[in-house]
Length: 131
Image (cartoon, rainbow, N blue to C red):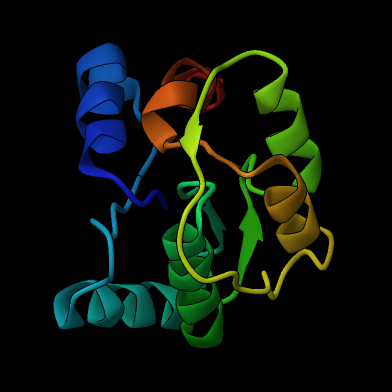
């Protein structure tokens, strides 16, 4: 799963028929997305999730995690810190939120005060999907 449509579109363009199944929640998930995830979960699907490293992205991840189980896909403290070493993100603004899957992520985001949008790590995500 990913947060932003650009990830889905780029994966389809880059990988074509070789792209594994990918659900884009497109920001705050709609009722249709949640229903799809419920049905896929009931059929035994397992999920990984990547979102924006910002408070909104963390909030979306928390909400999804309450609904369906998922593991982080380059969406934890280690991935955030590694990404900061390679890209220049924007200023992190908004109200801090705990990440239910990683207790160290909020403090790391607060300390560095840099948001990292999914678009900045698009090549990494597409590379993962190509395997």
